[in-house]
Length: 188
Ligand code: S3P
Image 1 (cartoon, rainbow, N blue to C red):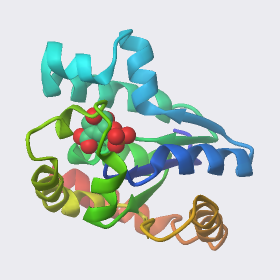
Image 2: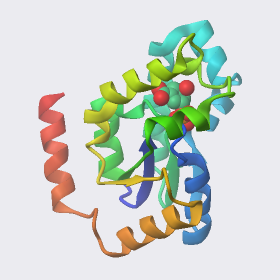
Image 3: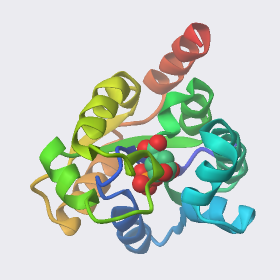
Image 4: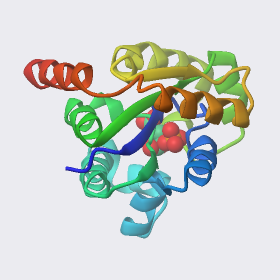
């Protein structure tokens, strides 16, 4: 499998798509937003997929689409916020590249996501409580990333520079990653 993709994971509203596009431009890599690809394949919006076929169906398509993208080389991939809850996805990302988690403080996420209706999991009566709940539930999954960057107080440019620096320093490479994969596979 190709080894050089960059997977941006992290909660909704942490900047994966904007950072991914800017990072790909800077590196001269290809960019893909996994949710956009899913919408293209399914010819409907993510909200409609959730409403018509439910979250488990969406997760199956998400897993399948990730595997297809993982066969490509030199891609920056902005992933949906829930991709990490499936251990198989973590293994696929780590085997085909590096997994970088963007994070942000809950209040920043709330401010960035309020007013958008395109996120079915946040279309609830109390999005703030839902965000806090999901952040807590997902924290152990995001912890599998090779590197995390808190984007709360950083500009787009600063986040991209941090990632480039980290990639150049070889921070995420090699043996540690493969050891971690074996651990995830065993615990899955
Ligand atoms: C989801 C995040 C969304 C999208 C879907 C589910 C999640 O992507 O994949 O609504 O479970 O956190 P973004 O993180 O790009 O908003």
